[in-house]
Image 1: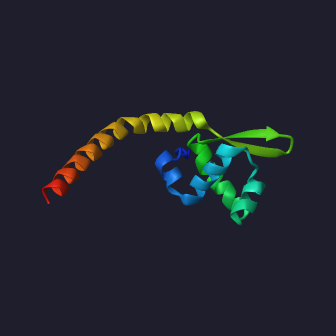
Image 2: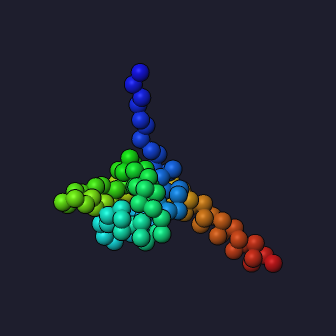
Image 3: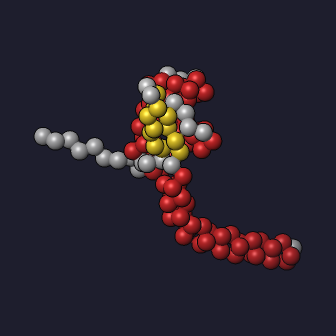
Length: 110
């Protein structure tokens, strides 16, 4: 029997505050799991579990340098995600503008 491992969902990956913090760090510079563990005061194994989830979503990419693995933020994947969100952003903005107009009208009537 073959077990097929499913990739993580990007929404589940970024729902965790620690993973969002890891992404924020990696957006500035590539880091090793050991360095990340020091910044979060958690074990390397715990950081590695978070990295695995982020890597399965292609949000981070590993780069081997000697015996170390540096993880890089994958801006291209985040751009794809942002592009997908943009279609909703226009709708939200239009609804917020309508709400602003309504609230202004109500305020003026008082």
